[in-house]
Image (cartoon, rainbow over all chains, first blue to last red; front, side, top):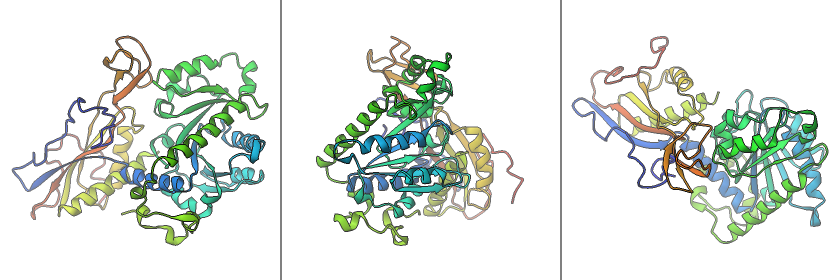
Amino acid sequence: MCQSCGCASASVSAPPHPATADGAAAGGPTRTIDVRQAILADNDRIAAHNRAHFDAAEVLVVNLMSSPGAGKTALLEATVGALAQRPGGGPRLAVIEGDLETDNDARRIRARGVPAVQITTGGACHLDATMIHDALDDLDLAALDLLFIENVGNLVCPAGFDLGHHHAVALLATTEGDDKPAKYPVLFRTVDLVLISKADLLPYLDDFSTQRAEAAVRALANEAPVFPTSARDGTGLQGWIDWLVARVAQNREALASRPVDAAAHGHVHGGREGLGHAHRPAARHAGADRP
Amino acid sequence: MHELAVCRSLLAEVAGLAGRNGADAVISITVGIGPLSGVEPGLLRRAFSLVRCGTIAQGAALRFETPPIRVRCRTCAGVSTAAANRLLCAHCGDWRTELISGDELILMSVELECGTDGRNGEGAGAGARAPGAAAEA
């Protein structure tokens, strides 16, 4: 990625930006400022701050995205059960739920004994990094290994906003059609894993092909694993759990070999006291304050 | 739609730039929006016509640059243009490509009026004027 502006230009041989040169509008009392900065730089900065929080606490964060009703919450319910059966009880979990209204999903997760924070966006179509930062007030990161963010059900808007997560996962329900990746390339191009949910319905849906869905993901130049899952009958859950556990371990190893990005955070939340730090009103600490 | 959030972020940055440069007004804003950015230029323009009201960019024109989708093949190293949902190499057909342009969402440049005379530079050198400019004040 181009370091000057955040665009996808991958090398110095990329074509020059067709921007107006600085001062090109000379001749009147006008000035043209050459900026070349990501428009969402503010969100990206707060996302980096969130990620520094997560890394300081060694918490892996997974952003789950899908259409409404694809089964994100059902998958999480099944995941809670499956992880609890791992030797040693599995990773310690929490969930941040994003919905326009209601705390129904958070209540479903809490009913399984897992902490859940509900963000109600009140109409906003996606979560952003500031909402996640605010939600951290209600989570004890030091007591977690794995945090799921269940984004607002929407295949368009959530794709544009970095939340500070480490991995993005898309659910594609068998009832939706296998051409969803071709219809929503912005989201499916960049996710790290695609789960074909409601796979128990495959015998009844002769027009859904897992192979075609996978081909549509490959056509986006995305090598993410694509596999069927069912929260109802357990199909594919082991693969999903293995993927998660491997990512948690991988993240730990990666963190052990590099210092926490204190610069992005503005200050280091050292030790236990800092990690469980009261992200209370004071929490609008320097690194995350909006200008 | 998220274009409203994107537009607020854009105008916050523009207002900051205008303030730091002591500008009286913003004449034009040029953004680069790739087809794979997830932002629809038409919707951003409509959001802009609302969000700019009462800001230093109230009279500003919004211009778009649309970089093409281009991919570099990891197999044959060829570079080609591609469609948003078909990022295959046009030379060898392989899907293992990397995007080298087309997902930009960038504030490219801002044209500021820094003199003391005339506050509204609307239209000055602007090829594309946002619709609904006269509707609010």
